[in-house]
Image (cartoon, rainbow, N blue to C red):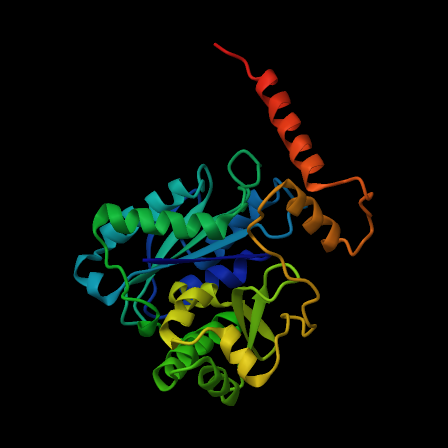
Length: 315
């Protein structure tokens, strides 16, 4: 089950698309006259005028199901799932239509609803993409619907824009991994396919903490492409750390191309080391006096601990 949400300014075009196809069938409606496409559009438009300043009164949702679920997807089941989906998404007390299309192998319905509800208030679209994913997952688990086996089954030829680029990178990374046994080979293989690899560094050090891929000017974090593409997981698969690869070619750079100017250590032996590290990081902006010794730093640290103990309340 996959939900796709869009919003628009005019009901006429949306209703025509949903009901105008030869194979389209109207399954359910609420708050509109269903004599014709025109009467449905007029009803939507009349209620929309309760809030004339709204820019996008049209709500359009397509709910698609896997071919494996097709035997269960009767009209009644599709309407029931659509209504429960709308309730969970906060689409209540408003006009809507639910129509089924049969132009694809997978079962799917279209919902058109008025974002101006029966009381003249706007139905919120806040975080609707996040909520959509959450609700679809809940319904799949509740009704035992099919869970896809990953991104390999996505029909990329139907994708557009960023989604298409994202899946192109996904397949390119998988293909490159199968041909590579080092970072050098992997990066070279991606570059051959028009994909740029960039590393994200911790602060201004040369410690790598992330990875991103760019194609056609569009950049994605590696883990957003797929969780298995995080830097740590790729590093384990390739069997050679990226630091080693960079040392082999004699370059260690930040993601923005500049060379790291400082390196931070994560362990400190004493309070004086902490102070010295901070001072060093600021390039001598603050200078310690000659009398500031490791013993003084340790004493100051112990005094701070005693103050914290005094502030504790015993119940």
